[in-house]
Amino acid sequence: GHDHNYSLVKRAEALLAAASPGDIDGTAWHAYQGRPADALHGAVASLPVYVTEQTAHTHRPREAEEKGTAAGSVAWAVRNVLVGPALLGAVCGLQWNLALDETCGPVLRGGPTNCRGLVEVPSGGGPHERSPEWYG
Image (cartoon, rainbow, N blue to C red; front, side):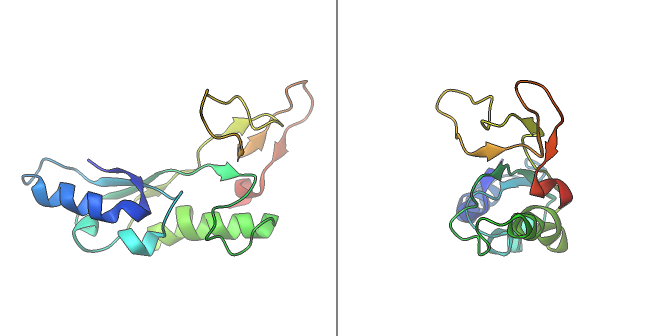
């Protein structure tokens, strides 16, 4: 099935069109590119929709209007991962990376280096800090 960005709705629609009834139980989406309203309609909305991955970033994607502010990060997550998709019929919205350190790690080789967890856990010990998305 489909488990990728909102911007790839044509790919999901093609998979659904080619599948026999009962072959696909639903579609899964990431919010790294595109917007929920671009994807969660028509044939896609005829099956369960899951927003399965979106990590917090030290900077939001290009289309984010409120770059660089805590309130903007929360508003973006609510609009694109949590509430916005639910209003369009999604059954869940998940934030990725529950806990990372102050250097946005650990990071897999070749992976992004600007992710932040919902909680920042200092590598040297000490109290954790909640990211803006924690409050979304």
